[in-house]
Image (cartoon, rainbow, N blue to C red; front, side, top):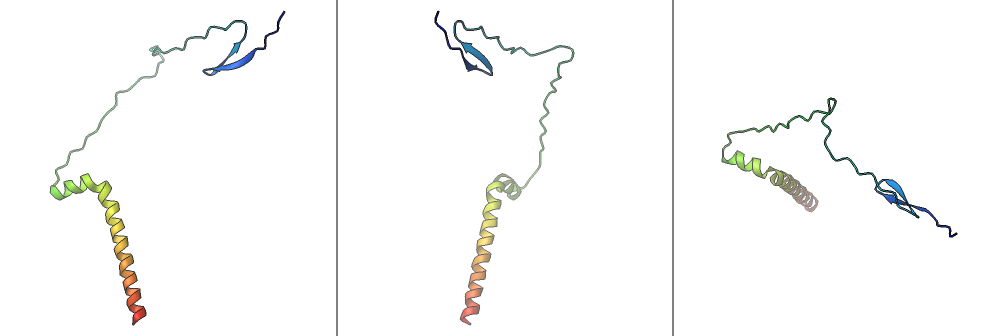
Length: 93
C-alpha cells in the first residue's frame, strides 16, 4: 500500500490538507446582521460652511496650499541674500 505524504497548504487563513481527498471549505458569511443586538449605523452628517469673501480673500483661500510655502521660501531666500550682502559689505569695508 503506497503511503501519501500529507502537507498543509494555506487556504485563506485556514489550513487545508492535500492528500487523498480535499475537504470542502466552509462558505464565509457576507450577509449583514440585523438582530436585536446589532450595531446601529448612524447616518453621516456633512457640514458645510459658507462665507462671503472679496476677490483677494477668495484667491488666498483657494491658492493657500501653494502660496504659503512659496512665500515662506521666498522670504527665507531674501533674508539669506540680504545677510550675505551685508557680510560682503562689512568685509570689504
